[in-house]
Image (cartoon, rainbow, N blue to C red):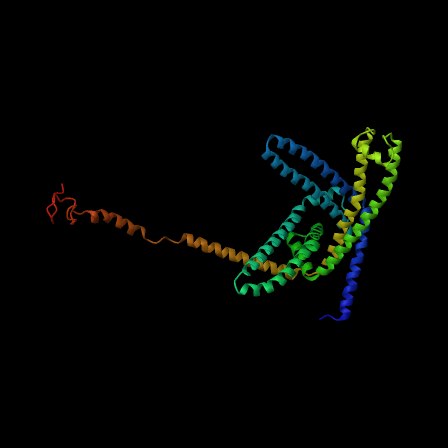
Length: 382
């Protein structure tokens, strides 16, 4: 049992680790990351528009072809977005870990060759969660046993609720958000999974608290930025509605500019300007969230020794491999065993069957193929 002094020291350490999240605020001023994230958003929108138009055209010709193209379009747009966001995270991760800052092209290249590891980690996490749900369903199904079922359910219900809640928290605050920073830091799939398991087992509360604080910090920055943009938009739109020859004037006439009424080319200029404002308003919060997750990963993974966990995992994998090899060898041996010599006996029985079947049609006495008359009753055979 830990002493009060040790508990107070741990709390102070957690508070100090949480304070490092303030370092994420300067992510909004990292222009390479800002440009890369903005370019990702623009390319994603353009890709979605182009692939969407192609999908609609092919769908008008053939429903099946349109469905296939729609799936391809989704993969293409998602790939562009994932590579771009991943590259932005890599740039910010370099800053968190004090590595030499990579250029945009190098970050995109590193992202393209590491996205598959992130997808593999997320896929394994999803499969493990499905396995847990299947196991929980099976245990609850066993609780249907008459007599023993209610007693068993009295134990399964609270244990299942606690375990499921912890797994949901681990997925929402550790497994999903911290998988990407681990990959950005150059970890393999296996080391990332081991790290996430260790954090969930030993530092779940610390990670949850820091994630909540990061969410509040990002929300505060987003609200502050959008407040600035909203105040500026009210003034600029009001003046624009009066001076740019939009019928009716004032703030309400801005809607006419969106529809192209009275403002001619100003409608397109307004749309472009709003898109720029959306990037300016959304990017800071996104950049802070990306850098914040890297900081949280650095803090919660500090001092964790994964050698024992990795050795245990390797031992289990070797045991599973040995069992699989043994099962395969037994199956091969069973297939190579000679079959029992029952076929010749059957052939002899078939060969003797015609001899045993030769009998007199009148008295059913035994006869041979050379007999003209039955030796028992004298019946003429030929």
